Image (cartoon, rainbow, N blue to C red; front, side):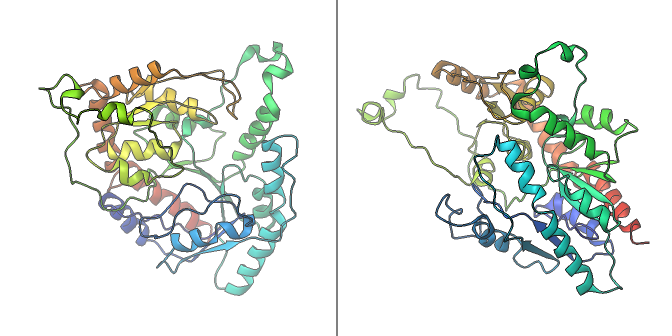
Length: 405
């Protein structure tokens, strides 16, 4: 919750965005978040590894060192960790049911914290509204109690927010229509989206123009603000050229030390976390095999790295379709449109399929590389003055500030 948003990343196009935000009458943000584990993330200026899993820490303590480091040096943002919430059993009927009840259980603590914040600031500082995560629609009830509007932050690609009517669906059996209760839960979320005063999306107009146009023209949907890509890039690497195989060698054994391939044939390494932005920003990286999470998609477009897609769960199939079929910035390794939200089907991917996808990805003069280079430029232009996301941030701030008048 807060009165306005400080969206000020670090690279030069984003500095332009930050200057737009800085022109507004800014106030302090208080970010209320249910405690949750932060895995697979690490700041470049942090000397510690990401918090390890399952070491006896509660939800309420495991994420705190990370969140403190995320706002280091920023006096206008403060995270408030909500603890002492009624615990839930993971033996509930499904992960989706667990998540729904988990958010519901935080309504009272959030209500109490907001009451305290309003009292601490006094009558001279009003409450402008709530900004909630796309899965925290239960918090709309809390915002209504304070008589302030709610804005939803949609963290996935906006195309995954479009629910297409399927006229013949009523003839399908319930087991085919509602896997693990997922469809009814997501429809309930979507219905509540319309109760918000605006939808803030981590995307940019040029990336999802069809979805933005279609949903923005629906009179039943609140105003949509595409403000992305919201990234956290550090200084970009420019140390090495793209890797190229020497054309004079057709056989790697002629280049490598004798017996190298045989000695290393059975050696491999799987790591749980890697500095993805550092890797994608390096000019020696020529391709990215990805499951198509939305953050990874935006990072890949920002740095102009073509993708080989291998979606597994959640909205990754829709992201992959957008990248391969619509935008032409990726190649397919394996896509299975029958996989459900939790990735329940057994999809087997052969070594040959992986090899073919990577070989197509690494073609130096392909149309995909041309398209990715164009999208890289568009992603950066969206954040500079008069860019699409730059303008949407201004509109969003103006909308929020109008709540104070």
